[in-house]
Length: 430
Image (cartoon, rainbow, N blue to C red; front, side, top):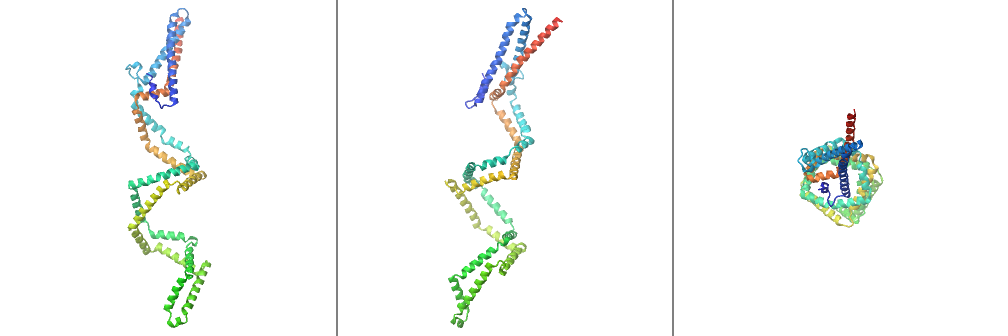
């Protein structure tokens, strides 16, 4: 039986079939060479008395036959028992399959997965360039964006089913409870007041008041209020209309001055008020206590939890709708974002270096932490292979080279036979 045939299956590659054919041819040539040596020996041995040259031919053929047979035995003993005989120290691979698996796994872990060669190899790989080139392709980024959108509903459902969402909600609430509101509010207001941006609020207030003073219903209400406050005698002379005109005129004039003058006293007073309020937020224990109490009351209300749940459900429904929509509102921005990330990686050497270091570090750590498991996996795989399949696979891949050992053994044996025959003749002559 041709044991290498067990390594060939219907789905084997063309290369495996070619290797099997080449192995068969090499075996046939090696066997034919032994038969040739035997035939030459049988034919030439009786002719030694006729001429001394036949003695050299016979010596070569005999020694070559012995060398070829010895190497045939050694090669066969590596894989199986020669002629099926229970000879000790034969069928080496099949009898040591478990030890070979352990040794192979340990060898891979110590030499292939060692920290130094793994780190050196990872440093040769420009991960950031590969990512940037991949993402810079609009088609690939569009496919990735579509894939992400398809995965989002499943991810959100998994989060809901795993209990992760309530856990995250509790964690967010716990973190919010630790936040000191007064310093946070003071910091936000300080950032907002940079470049006098808070004056825009005053501008909006001034514009609203001017619009209010031009509203007939507002003016009638103010006039009625003035009429109620004035003595009856004054109302006979329509003093309420006079007072209203003066009041509206003065207010309009003041508001116009505030709107045009960037350094108006009212604006300076507004600046002082905001600055003082920020200082009190930072330094006043009373303000801090009030804000913390307000925060605690808000977080304790069921409406906040219901609002968070409603936001989650709305987000989930929106994403599910987007995945079913032929014209997604998210896909195009997400695709553009991925393309922009790819371009930024191309244009930013420091970012590329950081990405490469980060990816290499993650892979190095993973390999270092799991190389023992990888070695065990390799060993278990080798041990689980059927012995005949294992031998057939090895023979299919290295059997042809082993057959050349038989050729070498035949040639070297023949040359050794010639040398020994010549030495024998020289000793006889001497």
